[in-house]
Image 1 (cartoon, rainbow, N blue to C red):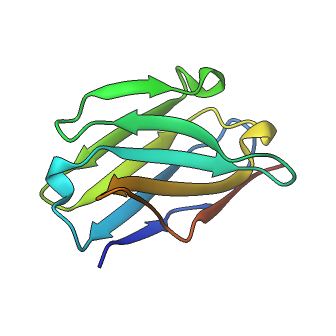
Image 2: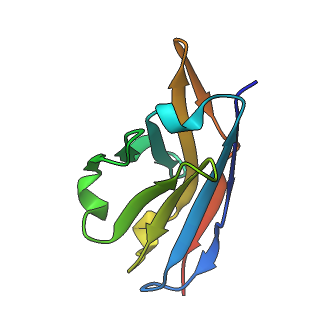
Amino acid sequence: QVQLVESGGGLVQPGGSLRLSCAASGFTFSTYTMRWYRQAPGKERELVATITSAGAILDYLDSVKGRFTVSRDNAKNTVYLQMNSLKPEDTAVYYCSTYYYNNRYWGQGTQVTVSS
């Protein structure tokens, strides 16, 4: 079955960096578009970045453009989110997701907290 496992979150000071990873299994990862979302407390989940199966980046959330970079390694069945120049407003649970056979699948999420 489809499984997505995020890792790499943590506590970081403003201006710092983190790299999130999402390990995928249970489907042919290299043929599916992957997405990163985030959800801050009391807010709706929002789409952060989208990367196609071939590695083309479709778009970023406006507030993260120039600071975040999405990438993938199809040989490792893993998608990444490099986050630089982090701000307190980036604090959220970050999720990776894919859409497979008419179903949306989510990982369990990884907490990112940006605070001094």
